[in-house]
Length: 501
Image 1 (cartoon, rainbow, N blue to C red):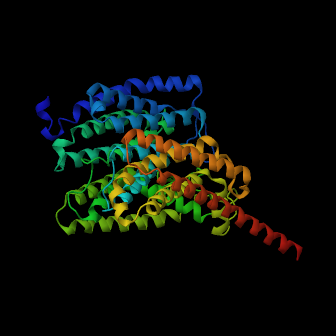
Image 2: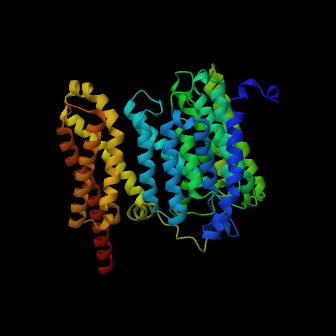
Image 3: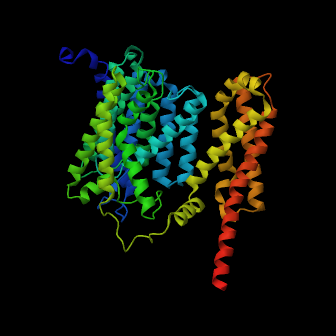
C-alpha cells in the first residue's frame, strides 16, 4: 500500500489519518454535548443559517489536532506554536460559552502573537527587525480575525483551510528546507486531517458549526506556521516575492475581510457588527446556490495558493505576470461584488458622512481603543530608548529593545485590561479615568520590568528606560483620550450654538 503513495507525500499521510480519525470520533460527541448543554447558534437576521445548529465543532478540530501533536511527538518539537494554539482555542471556547467582548479577544490575540515574536517566530519581509516584529503581530492578529470572519457559510472556512494547509504542505515539501520542516509538515497534516473530518459534518447543510473556538484556532495556527524559519517564505531575496507568496496563499481570507470592511464603512455600518454581506453572501445574491458560492471561493483559494507557491519557488521575474493578472481580476471581482445589493435599505442605518461614522466607531468600539493603545505603547517604549541613549549607545542596546518589545506590548495591554482602562468611555474621560490609566501604566511598567529582568538576568540594564517609558505611555495614552473629549466638547458647543441661533 505504501508503494502506491509518492515518496514526497509519505510523511504527510500518517498524521493526516490520525487527525482525520480523531476528528471523526470526536465531532459526534461534540455535537451531542452542544445540544445537551445548549451551546447552539440560533437563526438571526444578521446570520446566514436558518435553523438552530450546535456549536463546539471547533473543539473536535482543536482537540484532534493537539492530541495528534502529542501522540506523534510534534508538540514536543514545536512547543511554542502548539501552546499558543491551545491558548487561542481556550479563548475561542470561552467566547462560545460565555461571549467575550471583542476587545478582550483582541488583547488575547495580541498577547499570543507577541509571545510568538518573543520566541523568535517572525516574518522577514523587511530589513528592520522592529518593523518585522510589528508586522508579525499585525499579520497573526489580522489572519486570525480574517479566518473568523470567513466562517459565514456552511463549509466555507473549512474548505478554504483545507486548500491553504495543503498548499502550505506542498510549499514545505518542495522548498529548499524541506528536510528541516518535518515537524511543520506533520502539524499541518494533522490540521488538514482534522479539518477534513469536520467538513464532512459542516458541508451544506451543516449539522455542526465550529464556532470561535474553531475559527480562531485555525486562523492563529495557520498564521503561526508561516513564521518559523522553515515556513512558507520565498527562497529569493526579492522582498516582493517574500511578501507576495504568503499573501497569495492566504488571499481569500484577506480578500473577504477587506471587502466586508470597506463595504460596511462606505454604507455607514460598523465593521465590527456582523451581517450577511460577505463575498459568499454576495455570490448567492447573484443567483448562485449556497454550494456553488462555496465552490467558487474554494477554487479561487486554490488558484491563489498555486500562484503563491509559484512566486515562492520561481527563479524568473515572469512569475509575477500571472500573479498580477490574477490580482487585477480579483480587484475587478471585488468591485463587482461590492455593487450587489445585500443591505435592506429600510433596516439600514442612515447613510451619513464618513466623519460621524468614524467618530461613533472610535467612541464605542473597544477594539479600536486596544489598537490605538498598541501603537501608543510601542511608540512610548521606542521613545524611551531614544531619549535614554544617544545614537551610538542606542545601537549598542538595540538588541535588548527588540527582545523586550513583545513583553512590553503584552504586559501593558493586559495591565490596562486588569485595572479597568477599557471600561470607561473616551469622550467622558475625566480625573477618575486618569487615575485608572496611571495605575495601568504603573502596573504594566512594573510587570514588564520584572519579567524582562527575570528572563534576561540583565545586570547593567538601564532602569531609567522604564521610568521614561512610564511617563511617556501615561502621557500619550491620556493625551489621546483627552483629545476625544475635547473634540466631543467642541462639537457639542457648536451644535448648541446652532440651535440657539
